[in-house]
Length: 201
Image (tube, rainbow, N blue to C red; front, side, top):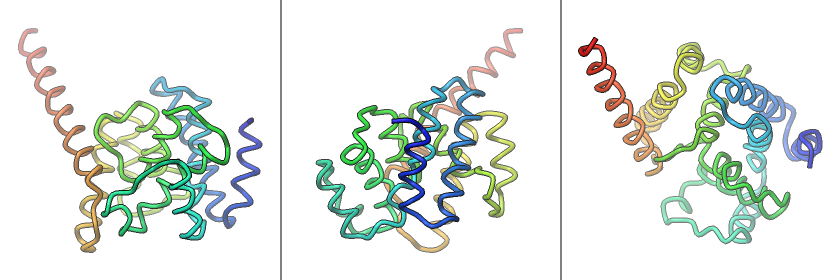
């Protein structure tokens, strides 16, 4: 299917504001993909589809998840805010016939992140944070980081998510903790290597 066909499908599944957000995420994903060397077509596709089931009834989301053979953990089943990313990944598989694992995973982990994220997953994760209509406190910092270093932006995004959810005493997905630790550990290794390199000069 073409991007335009995906866009038409998505437009019918959500209100105007959500559709605008989805188009903005697709546009930002393309920009970031070009900047950091990710597959541009996959980024655009995952971007427009990332919130495909955000406004889908709960029962339909759970049915999609089951049809895709995804087994929710007890925490995932009891935390509705995690459903749309998982059911969105299921939707693109069972309804749209998408088999590309990178696109599917980019949709599934676009809100939580996870350890070992691919370049495309990072692009979609950050595109969702920095799309044109976003206006939360800290969005300017996120946009600057996104233009400077994608991994730094991912670390900031996970830090933001953890702090925000903790402050509101809401459930935090284990994938987010593991993703944060993974990116943070790799960033510290990168920093140590850079210091060693400078010391050798």
